[in-house]
Image (tube, rainbow over all chains, first blue to last red):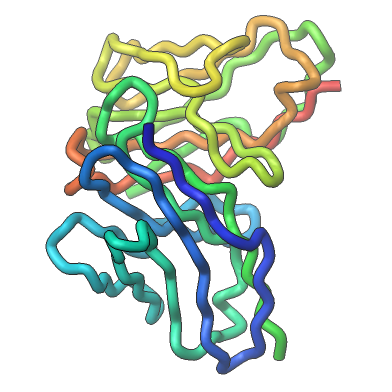
Length: 116
Length: 115
C-alpha cells in the first residue's frame, strides 16, 4: 500500500535561506507524487507534481522537487525563503483507498515558519 | 469561476445532532472527495465519488454518509454527531482518474465543533 512520510512537523528558516522539506514515499507501483501548500484558513493548493516525465519538477512560487527513486524521496526545495512562504506543506502520493488513482494519500504536513 | 464552494464555513453541534455539509463545484469535474484534517494527522479521505449517482468509502468513513445526486454537488452528512468528529472538513474535486493528470481543487474548509 502507498504511504507518505514527511520528516519534521515544523521547520523554521530565516528569510533568504534555503528551504528544504523532506518527503519519503512507499509505493508498490510507479508513483505520482504531489506537493500541496495550505495557507492559514484556506484550502490546499497544488505546488507541483511528479508524473515520470522528468525527475526535477518545477512548481509555482520558485519551489522545485526532485524525484529520487533509489532513495524513495521527493524533497521540496526553494533557494531563498520569503516571508510569504510561511504555510503548511503536504506531500501526497496517488493511489489511495478504493484503488482510484485520483485518490491521494497525504503526509501529516510540515509547518514552515520564516523568520525576518 | 467560483471553483469549489463549501457551506457552512463554521458550525457548532451538540452530541447527537445531525447536519449536512454541502460542496459545490462549477468545473464539471467527475471526481469529488471529502477529507477531514486533524492536527498532526494530515488529511484523511472520508468518502469519494467518481461520478453522479456514485459514492465509495475512503479511509475513515464511519459515522458519515454522502450523496451525489447532481454532478456539481457532493453532500456529507453526520447523522448523530460525536465529539470525535470535531475537525476541519475539506471538499475537493478533480478532473481525472489518472494520477498523471490529477489535480485536486480544494474548498476553503468547514470548521466543525461537536460539544
